[in-house]
Image (tube, rainbow, N blue to C red; front, side, top):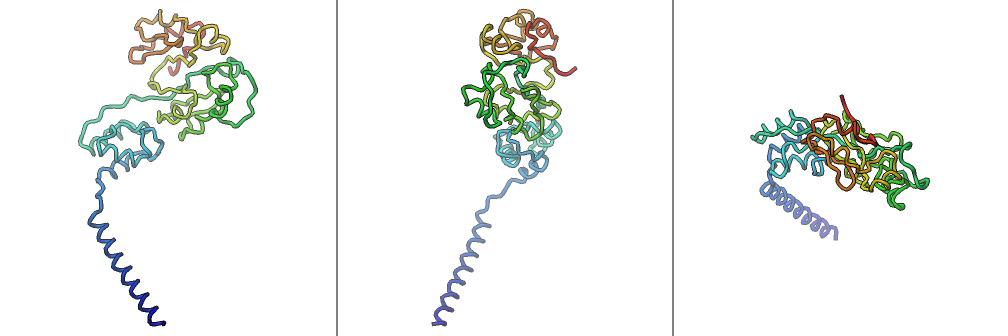
Length: 265
């Protein structure tokens, strides 16, 4: 009896060794060799794994670059020096990336935007927005509960007077806040943009005025005075074309609501 058991164990052990050897040989024969450039690119990336490039992380982005699916300057957290190094690894020239930053297109703080009711639910813009559009009178304005703050991995956002604000020195333009705002009022704009209309309301003048004392009313004064035709009112909202804008500031001085705000020097 014991002899039979030992023989069976011996046979199973032999099979295990044979199959192990076969699997080991197969892994060597059929292994997919990783392009060395992937590791080289991955090493010089910031390892933020923020997803701003559109891929799951830095490793996935590096693989996409090598496959030709992603642009070498597609990592918003990196800089031109890194892009040039990636270009050298790939043997191609890489154009410079326009520095961008996120901006919260809302100026309706606690003093300017009235509320319809007191909200006591979870501290989440998503949950508040589901409750009949949120507590604010303006259905487009920032809810100020910090979903964008929680999403930012770089500490670039904070809540000030009931609305989210961006620190451009910390912002990497990864787009996490843009993706996590349920109202879609965070935009990526050129970092050197000096004048920005901080409003997202598409309501007509009377309704916009009732919902917020500083919201855009679509009066078109900014559009009429711009010497470069860089600003236009679309859907009752002023929008700037930053490729045309020369930062003269005429639109800001003429705006009766003072919603076109100046940033930087």
